[in-house]
Image (cartoon, rainbow, N blue to C red; front, side):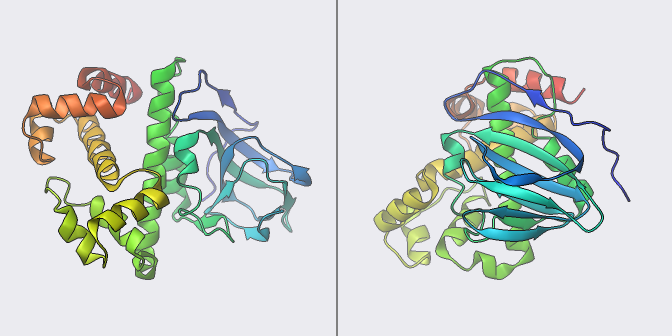
Length: 278
């Protein structure tokens, strides 16, 4: 079934930027005509193909066919182009973004030789990607932080979908570590035992994980816990219940950690989530 799309592109710009990153532009393009080789973007861009067929070509990875469900990552300052399929243009949803937090993901979420992942069904992933930037359109740093956190959550879900679809994708120590650090969030981790299970010492694991992911494993674990907490807040759960479910000593401990990571109090985030759902 063809997805309903606007007749003309809808592009929205937000400001200001934040130290961790920002969403620059987002919107739909209907019946896109393509672009000549030599086009460059100053930022990262996700392009999700909704209908039609085309190809993408850049000076780093060559030419790749694009079909509905393909999520493409365009890298900054890389010359690229798109070409029409046999029946003309195609429909896409795109998000342009940048920031140091996204630099940490670029080398492991996608295959360096093929910057494309197919995500099905299209209707779900289209809505999931668009949800990263929906909500109140008031400008400000809080909005940008929320969008960055949402986009990182989307990228995490893409990674988990890859593992679920192909268990071989989880065969490396890094993928195994990320999968385990994102589960059983209420349990305390014995880092020595965790590292031994991956065939290395705790110090070597910490150094290799930090080098690969850009953050230490303990901070990655905390980020997954706060991601889960954000979802529970959106589901109207109380702070005391969330603290208990996620292994915090008490609600005050959870509240302090939440503010340290997100820059917002529980009340501020809850109010923002309530506005976004209306």
